[in-house]
Length: 120
Image (tube, rainbow, N blue to C red; front, top):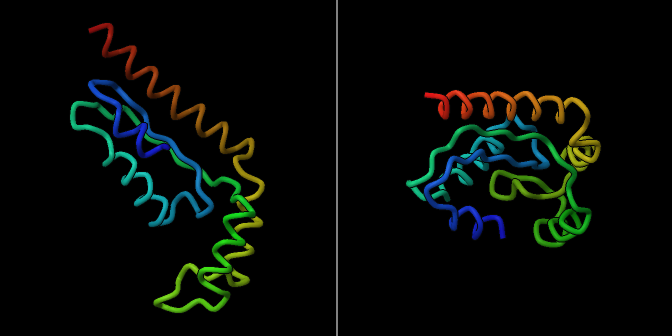
């Protein structure tokens, strides 16, 4: 649904934001956010971006266990091992108050940027 929505936006100023189970400063997070931005039509102007950790649906975790098992390898990096389970437990507390404060700061900056452009 998100992909379809992003692809439908035209001639707009947009901010792209997301939550994900991985650490927000990880390569996976950066790539995920950029993939969302890349879905936007070139007629749009990206005014900002924000990503933070978010809770993972337990149903997704169970599906991953069934599909990938519990033994991580170079070829099977999606396996649900103890390290992944710990990351998912940590993610279950997000977005937290600090994430919300960070989002507020980023979107306040985007709003100010857009207000400045409108006053030119």
